[in-house]
Amino acid sequence: MSQAPAPTTVPQHVAIIMDGNGRWAKQRGLPRLEGHRRGVETVRTTTFAARDLGVKVLTLYAFSVENWKRPQDEVGGLMSLLEFYLKKELKTFIRDRVRLRTIGRTEELPASVQKLLRDTIEATKEFHDYTLVLALNYGSRTEVVDAARAYAAAVAAGQEKLNDSSWDTFSRYLYTADLPEPDLVIRTSGESRVSNFLLLQAAYAEFFFTPVLWPDFTKADLAAAIADYAKRERRFGLTSEQLKPAPASASQ
Ligand code: IPE
Ligand code: IPE
Ligand code: MG
Image 1 (cartoon, protein in one colour):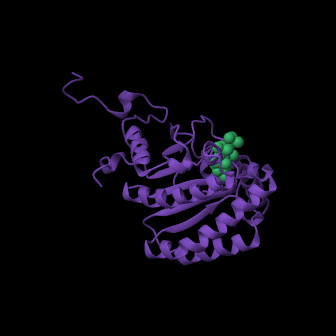
Image 2 (tube, protein in one colour):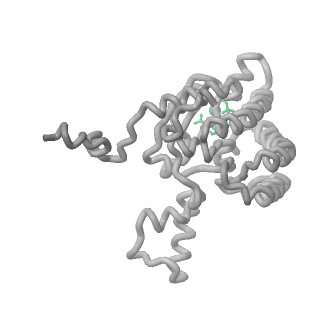
Image 3 (cartoon, protein in one colour):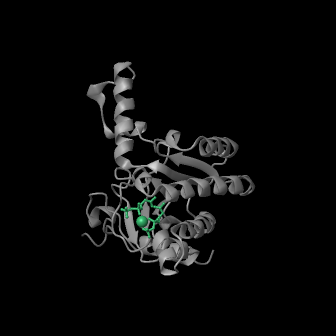
């Protein structure tokens, strides 16, 4: 793609907080669910746009643990939409070799959705070039609690030693154990907050906030976020000089 920056500057893992469906609908005098419906279309286009632009892992925040507190009809509508989306996308994922993964407490989702997720994950598990991760019933705090519980059980069973605890050993118990950390986190709709999303994994991610509402988010918007990312220097606590040592001749 001509829009794509040079390969080395493309974030390998992009994570998106898809926000603004409700406001998109409200602006048009439509029910909130219509915004979510249009949001699903954007999920579809963004999944393929990200791959075209060179991204290897795309994580989409689709439903948070806090979102259960929304009005019941909205929650029900979101679950139906998820079911509809998964049914429709399975063939496309297989055709286009997209591996599906989830993060979050999916065991609390409706049984019909769980089954579709299991089937889709199973059917796409051999694809390794591109992964779509859906964050469903996800919350970072819940994830930490789940990880701490699993880690404690592993310590009790003698599989881990408390004295050897480190980020490397503990992070294996997060939902994201086998995924790279996000390089770029995008949030749409003009809100500048993380809303309990990948708090630990995004410790050194770059953030990009855009006023565009999720249903209006296009490939060009994604390309603009990636282009902005490409201009940044990720320092991971080091100095700029350490990252780019001066040429030998210049330092003498
Ligand atoms: C994001 O859009 C979708 C979900 C959280 C499921 P919102 O529904 O949060 O849209 P706004 O923030 O009300 O506009
Ligand atoms: C974050 O959006 C969750 C998802 C995108 C699924 P929200 O709309 O729920 O976040 P807040 O409530 O504005 O922080
Ligand atoms: Mg919102």
